[in-house]
Structures are given as C-alpha cells and as structure tokens.
Image: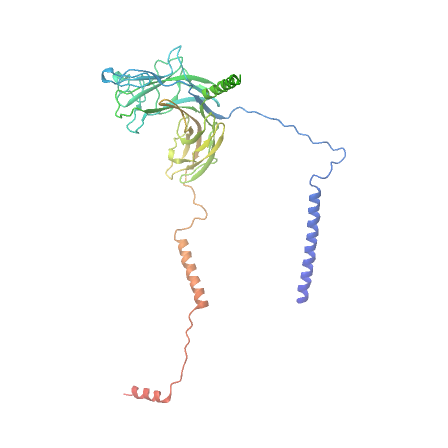
Length: 233
Length: 207
C-alpha cells in the first residue's frame, strides 16, 4: 500500500514536470510570436486608409436667441385711477406691452432656429407669476375656438387675473387667438395648420402681452415664460 | 502714442466682444429616434428603457431635465406620467451631451396594447428680457407595448413564512449542538446505608 502510494506520488510528480515543461514551451512560443517575427519574403505590406465621415444630424433641437430688445411700448390703463401704463410698465385695465414691434416694417427680436432634423415647432406660454408667489394670471385666448376664452369686454380682452400672449412676425395672422399652456403649432413657422421646419430654418418673432382687467395680487414684478419646442412630425 | 495704441486695442476687443454677447442663445436637443422598449412589457413589471441622449445646443450652461408629455400625433394609448421614472437632471455646458436613464413601471391594472407618449427635455435657465423669460425644450417619441398577463414572479420567490421558519430550525439545531458539547452533567452516586438506619426505617414502616 505504502509502496503503491509512493509510486503514485512519483508518477504525479513526473506528470506535473511534463505539464510545466509544456507550459514553458507554449509561453516561450507566444512571447516569441508577439510581433517580433519578420514577414516572410514576398509577403505584401499591410496598409490602411483612414476615412472621416460626417453624417447629417440625428437630433431634434431648437435654439432661441432673444436679441437685445426689452419689453416696452406699453399703453392702455386708466389715468383716472392712476393705473395708466407707462412706457415700460403695464397698466390696468387692458394694459398692453410689446417685445418687438408688429407690422411690415416692425421689429422681431427673437430668433428661433431649428438646429436638428425636420420637426414641427411648437410654442407655449405659462401663467404669469407674481414676485410674492401669490395669485397669478392665467392665459386666455380670443377669436374662434379659444382654448380658454378671455372674459373681458366682448371676449376680446382678458378678464380679471387673465392675460393674453401673442407671438407675431412680419406676416401677421389676423385670426390668431394667442398662446396656450399646452404646446401648439407656432403659426409663424407655417401659414396653414402645419408648422414644419427643416434643418437650419429660422424665424424671427415678437411678443405682444395684454394684461388683465384687474389683478388680485398687488405685486409689481411678474414673470412669464414662453417656450419653443421641436416635436416629431 | 502708447495711450492711443492701448485705446485702439481696447476698442478692438470690445468690437469682438459685442457680437458674442449679441449671439447668446439657449438651446436643447434630444435624440431624434424614438425611445423603444425591447420586447413587451407586462402589467406589474418594471423595465429599464434605453437611456435618452440629450445635448445643450445653446451658448449658456444649462441644467437639462426630462418629463413625459404626449405631444406627438399617432396611434397608441396615452401613458400616465407616473409610469415613467426619469433619471436626475444633468448640468451641461455648450455642446455637451449626456444620457438620462428612464424606467418604465407598469401597474398591475394596465390594459394591454400599444402605448405612445413623448419624452420632453427642457432647460432650466431660460433667457430673461425684463419680466419675460424665453425658454426651449425638445421632444422625442416613447413607444412600448403591454402584453396581457401579470408579470411572472422570479424563480427564487419564497413564501413569507419560509425564511423565519428556516431561522428557527437553525437556531434549535445550534442549541442542540451546543448542549451536546457543553451540556450540564448530572452525576448520581449511590451510597450504601448503614444497618442502624435500615433498622429504624423498618420500624417506622411497620404498623
């Protein structure tokens, strides 16, 4: 038994030595073959050409550049109440201010550019927020099929705590009812229901703001946000 | 002479700076290809959607965040916003891009069918002009299909009582092993009573 065990140990040791020898040979061959073997005579030399490729954009993107204009040209309000608009301050009721100037020879300070693939350009407004975060003014619309009807005089002007935002361009759209909370086709990018813009297409726009008949909040600082967005066709 | 040179240099620098300031813009971009779930979803399941590529295409630093809102026209049920859990907002400089992860969590009561909504990326900054802030966003489609049948439980799911039960059995087994190895030993020694005590005992016992 003891003899058999010793014999087994000896055989195992011999096989391990064999394995080690084979491993050393394989390792040596691998190291020797690592790029140091010269190419056989007559073999072709490998060559490669680097090609640079530019693809069309695969993103949907829009940029907005507001220029250097400021909100101004305000009018409306009631002098007898001491709430008449001044050049840069909105008055009550029915005060009106401009970012730009409408008409064929107008000023359209906001440039909207489609920087990605062809997309519909949507635009939306936000409620006006007072500096004290109190009661804001909600957006309303005029014309046919308003999303939220203005409740002021003849439904042509905003009521209490309502306001109207309209974007305009050189070519006016007379029946345009104004921006809504929900993003909708920007009419400036299309005369019909479409507002499709190809890559690189840009438009310039201005904004008209009509204030409420009256305001529940007494803040004199208000913020409104207008957002442009490219949307899949 | 030196003063005049300095003035010319200053004016030139200003001339260069003015167009840069005038061209300040905000812009965001999102992948044009729709976000699609590979395979189908099942009610009660949660799935990692492909992350969404977003990029700052404006000149200003922006924090970009995503929200879910149906804007695209097309077939497909609307997706309640609570079903999609977007990753955190990312802060990006001009031309920088990132990927924002999305997770789809389908409630058990979800109806089978094709679903369609949009992933909207929006910048936090906006450009202010007096009291008006101009902002940008961009949208891409999100599509997935919900197939009938509640999602199957995982193979290692176990009844709730099983784990505490296994714990109790293991505790008892451990206590048995410890008791066997270090248990209390009781030794009983028998001592032979002497003759007088035995005699007294017999007398007490007789009637």
